[in-house]
Length: 459
Image 1 (cartoon, one colour):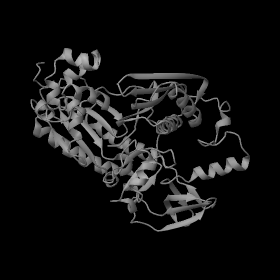
Image 2: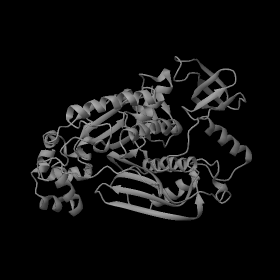
Image 3: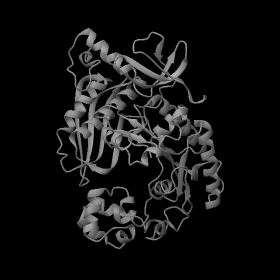
Image 4: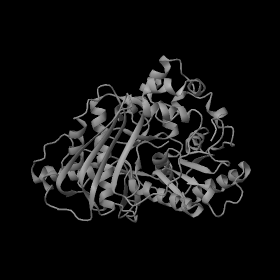
């Protein structure tokens, strides 16, 4: 292709991104939270925000922020620990919808995916008007199958521009970029819109006078290589010209299960990084259990402020799906890398998958908390189990009052709001934490998503 031409002649790559996904699911299922600030993530002292609703973002709360800081900025928000079964169910419904549209669907996480409209049998008109109508129908269908969730859609001739377009008019946006206008769209934007340009790279580019994509476009390939290195410089040279011919690749059978997140600012606080690793390890382990799998090799992936990427791995003597085991290994591996300059991407993965677990090998870790010793009396372990049982936001069922969700718990008490997605805002009642009439409410979610990554931050 020429420097100024689109990769495809028609806008046939669609990117869909479910808006503030985790928080939106919580607001959908909890009528009393609709229109109010909601923060999903770790709720303890070392917790990290996974997703903030748009109402919370007004107060400066964002993903990867410590929960402590989020509470300081928005103390009146609802802080929920997350219900990944509910998120998976909604994600599965959306992904099924996308696969009905096209055989080429590339999920990036639970809440976003690329779709190749060129292979969609029902899409016969790939003009701007034609794909716009396809996107409108898709957005309506997403609302229908998810009970009201919104997805922002971008459509363009390349993955690069489609993904950027989906972020331009959030929430509930729809942007189609006509072929030939890609560079016109990109040029006024900050150089940080280009994938791979984090704070460290942006600073290097700023030193040579590059602030916008238009500035970047004026820099020669040789100069970019000198400033940011061979691979990164060559990539930036192409992407500045909207030269991105990456195909949409349908997902394959999983060889590993992993979670990773890229952050808007470089993270340097050690406790925050450890908190992120703990939460990611928990998500990976939960997905292993859901898929009835276990794994032997734990890996952490760390991309530093200067865009260098480090991976560290450790292999266990037998496979596990235990959160505590995965988290301990991941933390130890994180400690092997000098992160003092800042981290822009962090991930935890488990590979060497098997469909069995040596159940007693790691029994010593069961029911231990982050900061408590592993050993303890039976009464202490039981207390820990009860405390963990009532996580903020979890679904519960009371023999007399019916379904509801945990508003909060502590000091031997649990407070429940009795409402569901189909009711009006419901009453709040408090019970003893060991009330036999109150039990967790399971969801009927099939375990068939082991090949899908969990996003670190909903957009």
